[in-house]
Image (cartoon, rainbow, N blue to C red; front, top):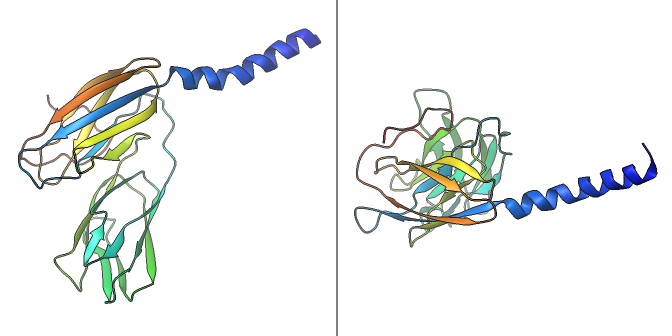
Length: 212
């Protein structure tokens, strides 16, 4: 291969990431719920066939003012979540389960933090033995695009490869929704998800499409 061909190959290799980035799209979404006070809906895109698994994350669920903060946390499989104690009282962090995945981090004082790595997809309810009114949720989904809707019911995904996806939801009090969405190259799509009371489907991307 001559020098001219080598220079052209190097130019194309350098150009490719920029082209891919320019073609990426976005999703801007809103969620409506059946009653005021229901917040924190987990929303995620089911990845396309052959997509690489998303990398693990490092996240924090604080214990502050006798609450888990944030109350709902969305992470990918293999992610490690730290549970610091920011209250001037003892706290405990545990997840009960009849299946694999149960854990108990013990009881510890203010200023200390303990962590747990969530290996598998699913919705993990988090409790404190010392304060039974404290409840949180760690939702684990194998998607590169996942979010928790904010106090206004809004969420968004950036850097989405163009294509057609299943957009799914999870909330402990609401029916899971599966909506097909098409993301244009270099553009954005706006979606609105209207949720109803009911039992959610366990959050997993490997499962087949939900009933429409």
